[in-house]
Amino acid sequence: MRYRSRSRPWPWVTMLLALAACSSGDPLDPGGAQGIDGLVLLGPQCPVQSLEDPCPDLPYEASIAVRTAGGEFVTRIRSGEDGRFRVGLIPGRYVLDPEEGDPFPIASEQEVAVGDGAYTEVIVNFDTGIR
Image (cartoon, rainbow, N blue to C red; front, side, top):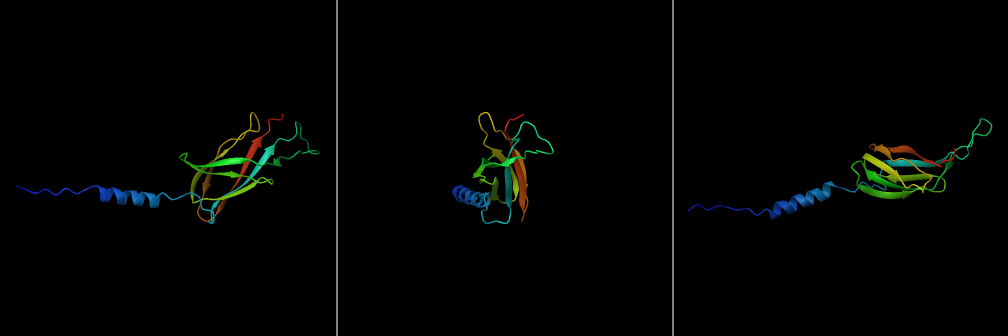
């Protein structure tokens, strides 16, 4: 009679799960050297603009969801009164998904590439609907 050794898969499964947990790190990198440095603007502010009265877009406080390029939620950020926000992220591709009003202001999703060792500058434009 021949003896067959049957290995149990559990040690291998446990090891693979541990490796997967280590390699799928959190994309947030609050103290990191890279991420997104953004400005949120709201405009137009006037129905008619001219050289004498340019009526520039204004900074806007907004809530923006940050997702990976694959759609996984990373975090939600809020711009300040000055319209600025900053979020540290590991290098990769992300999508900024601004929270819109009902019906205005509106803003489009924006794809952003974060490189190693630098903050990517982004402007998020909200449309007031004024025409």
